[in-house]
Image 1 (tube, helix red, strand yellow):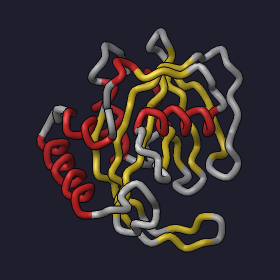
Image 2 (cartoon, one colour):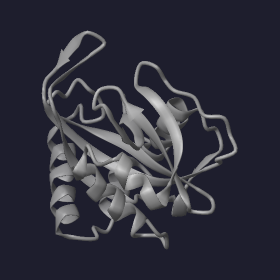
Image 3 (cartoon, rainbow, N blue to C red):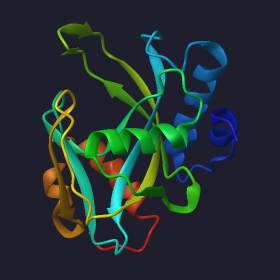
Image 4 (cartoon, rainbow, N blue to C red):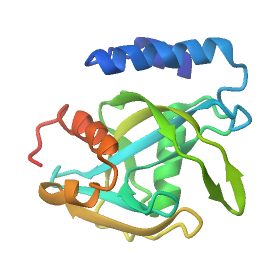
Length: 187
């Protein structure tokens, strides 16, 4: 299934996702470069919130740009496979190799604003990430590692207190709650 079909088939869980899905589909229709960063207004991204098999811990990375703990993910860079990109980014940013997508489905769909910032010495204007998110299962016995150009920390955190780690970005906590509310976990 290609990315457009996957997005179209996703059933929004609330009004926010319904509206964001409309925006994402409109952008896909109107921009031929939606899969690349060449589109400086908006582009598709694919992310993953990684939990362990027991559903007691979450694997977070400390993002250099945002100076906050959060999920893994990144730009499509021309790839049309949302799941492949979510898994690739999770592996690159954490070192964990044994990853899978829970239920093989999109877990959240959101339009996120990205503030202007510098990356690798280059100024990046504010823009939109048309974010497709997945819930990933990872093996907590694997060794984790940082990806120096993107993060400065990687660690497993008990679900019972992971929201404390993400409080610098309350808008992201909303997304994490949406994802975790889809499965039976205590946090």
